[in-house]
Image: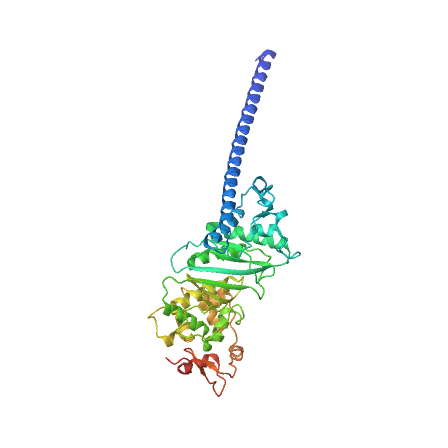
Length: 436
């Protein structure tokens, strides 16, 4: 069979080349169109972010009082804006009201509303917070609050967890804060802000949410938490409980239960630390316990008109201990609810531990902790949550009362007993301590 002549072969090759060239041109046109669309989308994003930045800065300047409601809201919104993951830092600009210069937004100081060159040198040099990278992720103003719209079914809780960072330098602090922000910023669940009691750390403050939603979100945090964050003795764990649904009597019983003299060792065990200047245990009267005494640094703080705050817990990064504290606040709220039991029973820790044990499906971490750390018992729950039972003899020695006068629950001072009773023996003489 005769093969194709040279003229046919030449024509076929030229046709194939034209197809290839046409395909390459079409591909190039599609790439250019895609790139053009991406440039347009990028320009639109930058323009929208610039408009939003101008609006927030203007709002920040109008409501300059950060402690007012609108001022705190303006601070919170501008800090949330700077925590956006897709923010185009080097393409956004602002005008400094002092030098009237147009600067990149990276040089903007939220605290002073000025550029870096015009900011007063009021930060001590050489400390970990002396860096704009730190304040890009950490709200410098402690008055800033997260979103206050509750999430989930009532009752609602808000949590403040204080953590430190090792090593104590600006780079580690900024990196740890950045990682935490990326974990907790979904649904505006929490913000990261500075706390004056910490040397090189920050406070994670959540929005109001149900207990189950908190467990869901904090489980994600514990799974992904940065390795640089640690707990120091200065770190605390504060739990806010919404006042909605609680009467004055319920609040008074909660305050008296936590501050009761005969419950002191039990509360110290639940809190993981003894009382200090930031969470004081004071003598309370049932008739006035629901009123704020003017000191916010109490074990149960009533300064907030919408919540009561449990301040006595030690900070922790242990998942089980963390959930134990959350469940304790929920259980105490339910235990002290009106008409659930008598006033005397509401002051007895044995009644409380039985109440928690009967609701172990609702408060499993708390029940396991009480069984292990207070009664020294082992069970499947204590093993599951990693609570090692405490020897009973050691617990009895550590919970001895000192011979001293004892404050009565309803005011007045009672003489100390002739012999030093143990904490769990005092309930037998509860009528002497809190006559009803």
